[in-house]
Length: 275
Image (cartoon, rainbow, N blue to C red; front, side, top):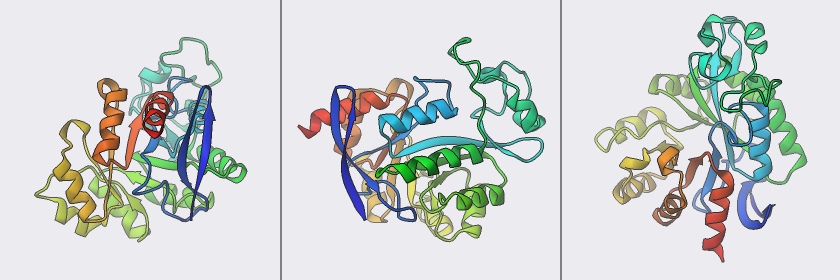
């Protein structure tokens, strides 16, 4: 069941679709363009932090992207890079440190000392925050899980515990996604688009919910091929492509979901097309 609601943020309002119950396919396949917040609303706080995710949910998104990695003591923490240096200043790898060691570090890359209390959250902390949000709001937010270096069973168990397993999507290597499929026949898998010559092989192996297609390589024929297989099309509109002209193009081409660093800009652009 899908409900439509009005999202009011600042000076603009637009209609978005969202699942009303956990356990359904998330977002609105075949409907309005879905939005995924790349590492949260990273313009409003350090990336991959609870502040960035809370800001993204307040601004209005269908998904928040989380980059999941394992620590030395096999805890699942949210961190994009394999190294802690860029985001915390410590020149060590995530999997060389315990969670306790990582929790002592401030995640403030790009923000100087403005956010000394922001720490790398655990998967459990993010799940708790999202579950609480979903209990309090008609519009549910879903997780876009980028499986960087994970314990598959631990990740799946945590998502299930917080009633988020059925509504999360999983991006990662074919090997990792295959392991997820073995544990969950209904998991929503999003492999990278493998090229037209390997599509059938990947479909047979993974039965994907969507393909992540590189924006610079996307074509109407690729979109048509995916839709003919009842597979959604996701694409990252980041950095030089994170522009209103590209949001408009994605909408016109029939892309199902875009990933962005500029949530407000996407809403403003799409609102113009809805008038």
